[in-house]
Length: 172
Image 1 (cartoon, rainbow, N blue to C red):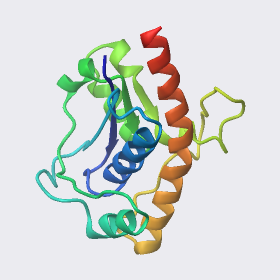
Image 2 (image 1 turned 120 degrees about the vertical axis):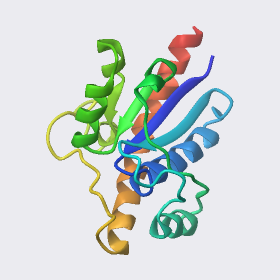
Image 3 (image 1 turned 90 degrees about the vertical axis):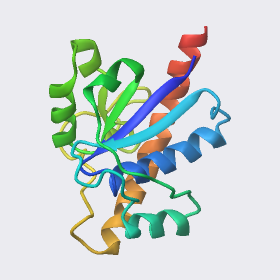
């Protein structure tokens, strides 16, 4: 049974496609590509059908990741098919929880940086509290995209561990 993860940011052209490509690479490296499906979307539909921001593409490609992407808007109807909905900031998390059709679906929403091992108080725990947003690099310079990639990569390690454990429990 496939485990499905969807990353969500505002317009699905910067942070969430970056997280999607980084996490997909981690999943493949872990030998879980046939078991874990990775996707992304935005809370808004302003960029639907567009490619990722050129700065996102450049930073991803220069770091050895894929970059093919078509932006789309997250739909509440997707919740039942997803196991985790990973928000890139608290505003996205609030919007996603509001969209969730059931409390169980709302419980699937997590902040990406809550999985960052440097921010997690104890192994296996999930971080909580302020300071877990991945800042939107869209209105800034390239440095913001590089910072975004660093945050995404750092959190992907902990997220992969959590997903690996969830997959193991599901198949046990």
